[in-house]
Image 1 (cartoon, rainbow, N blue to C red):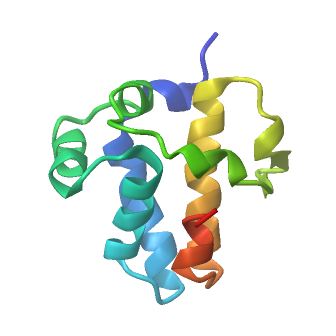
Image 2: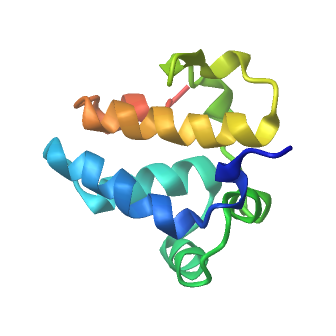
Length: 116
C-alpha cells in the first residue's frame, strides 16, 4: 500500500516548508530556490504544480530535471538515513525534506545546493 504522502497534494505541504524556513529567518524565495534546484521546475512551473494541487507522485514524475547532485544529499530525516531509502519516490520526498531542514538550520545556500 502506498504511503499517504504520495497522494497528498504538494500544495498542502509547500506552505509548511515555507513556514518552517520563515520561523528560522529564511524566505519563501529560498524555499523555491531549493525546490527548483532539486526538481528543475522554474518559478512558473512550480506555481502551476501548486495551482493544480498536484500530488507528490505527479510532482516528482513531472519534474523537468532532477538535479544530478541530489545523490550527494545525505543525513537523517524522521530517523531514517535519506541515502538508504529504497523507494525512489519516498527518497525524493525525503531529499526535499532534508534540504528544507538544512535551510531552517541556517546552512548556506551553496552548501544546500551541493555545488559538487
